[in-house]
Length: 150
Image 1 (cartoon, rainbow, N blue to C red):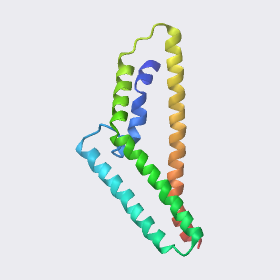
Image 2: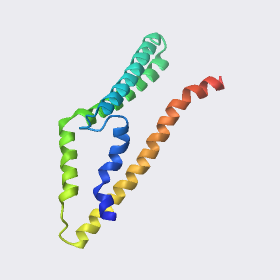
Image 3: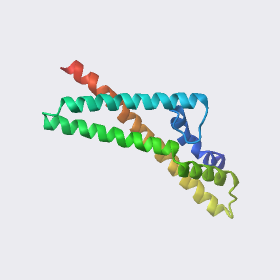
Image 4: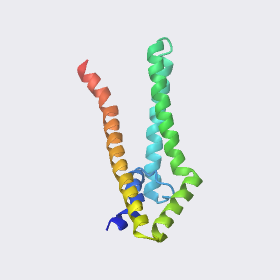
């Protein structure tokens, strides 16, 4: 059972990315629509942030805050699109899936090391995903909280 779970490790990573249409090689119609929605969402955020940047040209502190947000969102957007469209990443994922399917272990010690490593990766992924969800929730709760606080 541990070995079957370890061989499907990419499915745990794939699930949240495929939900947003960002998994490499996913070419279904629904995936393309979700990707288009994602790009539209970030495009609207960029246009709003650039508009706000132009409005803040006289206030240095607010301008720096705005540039920080724009750069942060730009880095995320670039990294996500790189994961989605870079042919090297698609090839690496294909090779990893093939390796997980076809690899035969020479002895039980090698198998144990492999399973321990994959289980650590799985725990790290789950903890990282929890932090990412918490950061996203805080990011979107902050403006309404400021609105109700003021």
